Amino acid sequence: MSTEAPRQGGTWRQTRVLLYKNCLIKWRTKRTSIQEILIPLSLLGLLIIISMIQPNKRHGRMPDSVLYSTNRTSVSEFIVGYTPITNVTRKIMHKMLSEYCPEEFLTEQEMKEASLLNPKKFIGVIFKDSMSYHLRVPRQMIPESSSHLESKSNCSKSFEMCEAEVYWYHGFTALQICIDAAIIEFKTNHSVLEGLEETEVVIMGKSAAVEIDYFFRGVILIYLVIAFSPFGYYLTIHIMTEKEKKLKEFLIVMGLQDTAFWYVSLFI
Image (cartoon, rainbow, N blue to C red; front, side, top):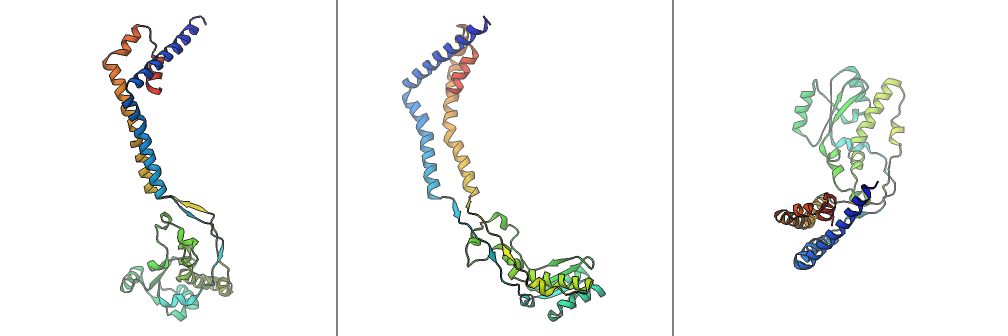
């Protein structure tokens, strides 16, 4: 106890003396000290002005919206083909899609080659078994795969279409309803087409949100590093100057403690 108390008191006194010394140095080198403070402040002020010029986009709350009933006539604009050809797949396709004259293909490769002749109007149905299938559809029938990275501002505008509505109005959902109803009727001998078509579809609303420009945020992070780099620059000069003058070694001989020196040098 008797050895620790004087050590702690000595450290505090040395810290105060070194702090006073650094304040005198800052006062004598006013120009450098002012530059050390004003350069980061001016850069931060410029950053604030830039952020005010390009603020974040704010989108208001979007309420729930009910979609109109699906229209099977949108499928009539396309050429519908399916594979493989079996009694089950033929019955399923012709039960609900006979009015669209679906084309039969022996293999999936044969269907792919046929789709290349009219890629914007060809829809392919690939049956895995009597209960499951895959769809090959034109690009305009589905949203962009990168839409989750883009702005959702158009969803808040009543005159524009959200990505989810593309499935509903461009025939993708109507085609699925027809095929699913045909599969259910084939398995159960019970028609559910009318019930599926009358199902009410609602796009869930969204709360108010702020759209953040990630590119601008990245620029801000780089800018902040540049803004505060003068602190590191002047700190390095200060430490190197004291090292060249061997001030620390001289003060250690005089009884300086490392704790006091590094606390003042690095943090004050």
